[in-house]
Image (cartoon, rainbow, N blue to C red):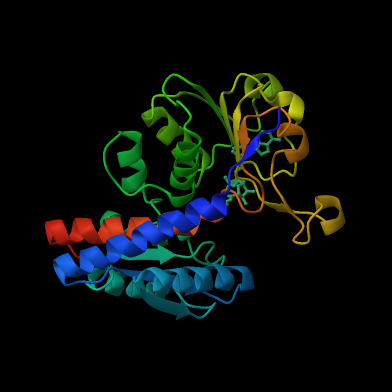
Length: 295
Ligand code: NAP
């Protein structure tokens, strides 16, 4: 079998188009434009690239971008002050604190200062709790992007065996909760799981988010499974077989002979994260417009 390759770029493009259209309808209806504030502390080049991408994406879909930058030696109170000001600003619908923050700061403590209704990353304790309880809230962007990709496969999630490799707060746990909410039978694996290969081989839907290049072998895949590769690792380009040197957690060449659908790396899950961030920002603006909440 040769798997269908799920085109994350195309799906992300479609989502961005929908958000752009819905943003204009929102502006027409409310007279207000959704706004997203990114907060970057320090000068880590990779973080600056991510923030730049988010700022550009906002402009493309008509979301007002707010770009807050603080020096690497900014104190907790400095960052907290910016987050509090943005929290009270009605023009700011969503706030994203770019992680990781410099070592002398606590990303967790700072994130907890962002009100749940502006937490467009969906990572605050309140939004994580709402997801765990199956109640409405802002969902973390990458797992929400995976659900969007799964929807394009037409996969029947209800009753399906879903296996999530990885249990991070950022991805694995919310991914498992979203699959459970879709009525899949969910197993979560981690570094202490016995017989990883055997558990994976049961999966109708396998979602890998470990960060170990090509760890998931073709023999771990159930024939006809849907394989979503979230992992991103950089290896020498000649080994990766592409110029970027980026590879996922799954041995793509082997797995694509056995799976029915599979995401590539790059170009699979990666492009979905910003698209879902934009969708979350619009959703946050809509909730705030309904409830009159600004913070
Ligand atoms: P993380 O916090 O490092 O978590 C990795 C998870 O993998 C942990 O639960 C760990 O288990 C598990 N693990 C590590 N080695 C393992 C092994 N040999 N066997 C089984 N499980 C193992 O990473 P993360 O933030 O969830 O991200 C995971 C990957 O996804 C990374 O490559 C990251 O770059 C990528 N990612 C991509 C996007 C995107 O495309 N936008 C977004 C988020 C993450 P323990 O809990 O037992 O330590």
